[in-house]
Amino acid sequence: MIEAALSMSALGLGLGLLLGVAARKFHVETPPVVDAIDGILPGTNCGACGYPGCRGLAEAMAEGSAPVTACTPGGRDVALALAAIVEPGGGGAAVPGMAEAEPMVAFIFEDHCTGCMRCFKRCPTDAIIGANKQIHTVVTDACIGCNACIEACPTEAIVARVKPKTLKSWYWDKPLPDAGADSREHAA
Image 1 (spheres, one colour):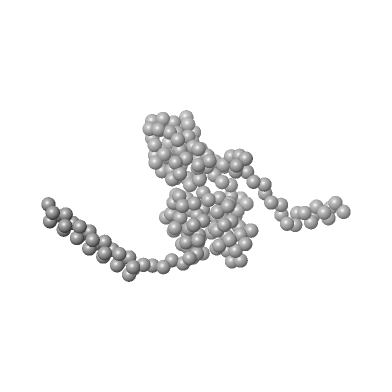
Image 2 (cartoon, rainbow, N blue to C red):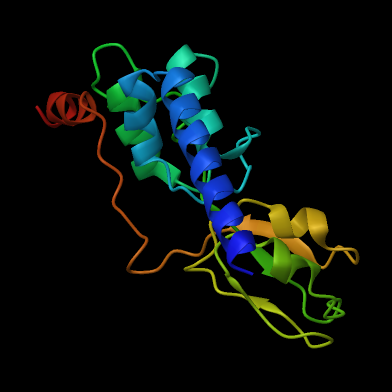
């Protein structure tokens, strides 16, 4: 009994040291911009952007092969913060494609829901409420619009809808810089 415990302890210590040496020898440095981009992304790893997780999207953005608007669950604020890092000049004021992108959330037609729990298991933010063989519903404040539940639903009871405006999610669009000059010219 003591020999077995000693041999397993020695084996564990030896393999741990081997893994430590291998981690130092084969360590790959990542550019600091990838870490900065990954820190801004939501970290839900939902795959809505088409990349394998937020780290994959951060690497693609650092290479320039993915736009800053690729993270739909992050929305406008994340895209503007990413544009400040990725875009040359770092302004982030004019992000192409930002105006037409509306935040989307999942909506379940409860009369078509069978309670199969497939959507419940796929949701990365636990925005779906329900139980086995019972009707499910979506908490819109928690939904990030990744569409993972839509793909998993066998009865096609889930659709994507524009996120309803509430006092918490509503913001006033900024006027265009030249709009004020035109109105002053017409008044004179």
